[in-house]
Amino acid sequence: MSTFTAPTLADRLETLSLEVAIDRLLHRQTKSWGCFRVVEETRTCYRLEVDHLPPLSVQMGADGYTYKAWWGVKGATAVVVRKRQPKLITPTRPQSPPQSRPQSQSPALRIQSSSLAGAGASPSANPKAGAKANVPANAPANAPTATPLTYEIQWRADARSTQKQIVVNVVQAIESRIQQLIDELPDEGIKPRVVVTQLD
Image (cartoon, rainbow, N blue to C red; front, side, top):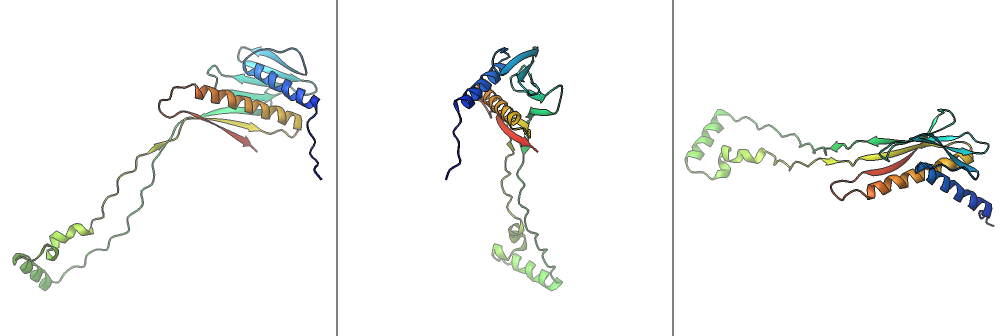
C-alpha cells in the first residue's frame, strides 16, 4: 500500500511563494508581502526573511556569477559559488619497455663481420644497417587538453527541513541564472560550465 501523500494546495502555494521571493531576491528586488519577504541590506546584498526562522542573506557579485549566502548575522555559509580556472591536462605517455644491451662480440667475430661487410654482404648482415631496428619508434605527442572555466556551487544542507528546502531552491535558482548567462555567450572556444556540490 502506497504511503505517498500528494502536496496540498497550501503546500503548492507556499512553494510558489518561495520561488517568487527567491527570483526577486536574485534580481535585487524587494518584496514586503507574504510569508517570504525580501529586504535590501546593501546594493549587492539582499535578505530573505521567513517567519520563525533566521534570515538568509545573499551577497551577489556584479558579474552575475558569484554568490554567497548565510543564515543569521554572518553565520555559517550555506551557499557559495567558487570560480575554478581552466587547467591544462597533459596525458602521460606510456613508458617504453627497457631495451636489452647488445652483447659484445669477440675479436674473431668482429673480424668475421668486417670481412662479410667488405665482401658485399646483405644489409641485414651489416651491424650498422641493423642498428636502427633496436630504436623504438617515437609515438606522436598527445596534445594537452584544457578543462573549461568552472563555476562550482557549493552548498551545505541544514538539519532543519524548512531551511534545507529554502537552500535547495536558492541553489537551483543560482544554477539556472549562471547557466543562462553561459548560454548567452558567443559560440567561440570552450564555454564555461556550472556544477553543484553538496558539502558534508
